[in-house]
Image (cartoon, rainbow, N blue to C red; front, side, top):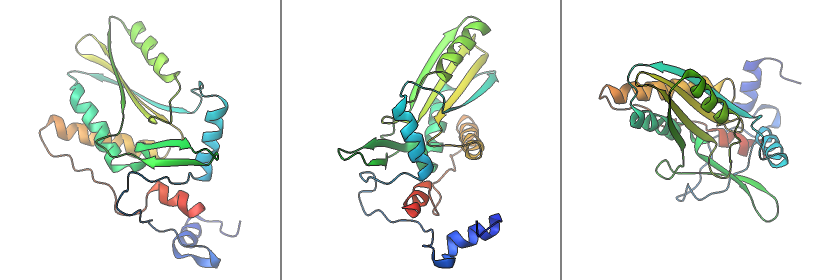
Length: 212
């Protein structure tokens, strides 16, 4: 532990001090959505745990939000997709080759598979049953790490569950993603353009490449 403060760690990572390779944005060529990228060490741990028990929901990171009033379902789905357009890590598809090497591949927003389920129930108990079922269901990382559940309790009460596997999100970044979803949804329902664009700087996949 040569660097004991956040600022000194950041300086080491970015500037390449003490012989370290600098952390930079990696160029991927023209076919950016047909590449196999390495996982970070933390993601590799998540992948091993996923393989050990593919039916486990222990590493789901669900966010449950109760909404009252009119809900625009199509605009909510578009808002989640807009946030995924900004945050590439949400659009990663995971797998392993014949040699057992694990990889992640970015999926274009247009081709990204967001698991969406919309149900209507007649009571709060029914809503909680649906929410508990979603939270307790494993995520299939070879398909998508994100799912969306919307439960309607009548016309003016709704339960929204944005469920993301821990391989793609953590306690710090979940707030950023949810904030972008909310911003995109508010823009869409008010007829404004969605101003979420992918950051030109570092992506999480760049950090994973840097580790290797």
